[in-house]
Image (cartoon, rainbow, N blue to C red; front, side, top):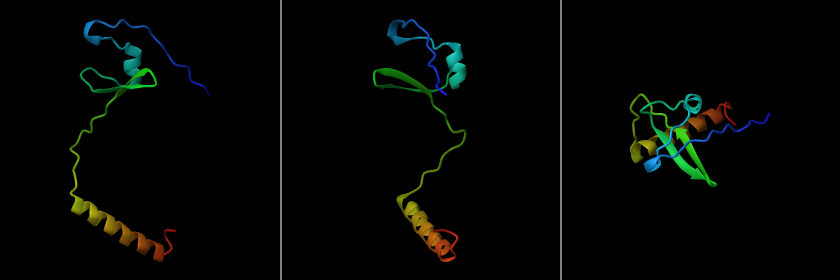
Length: 86
């Protein structure tokens, strides 16, 4: 099934301001005061919604990451010995 690109003509106002038509905002989940990523790709302007996690994300130290990797290797070895992992 081939999708057809929807298009609209919008006016670019001073300072580059333009209105994204409501149907596009709704379809993409772009909300008032929300964030969007804007980039160019192959001569096109791409606008994508940015999702913010509603909870804090923990960061890990290099030492903690090394420990996780070591634990993963041990678990993988045990699972392979029990033939639960190939």
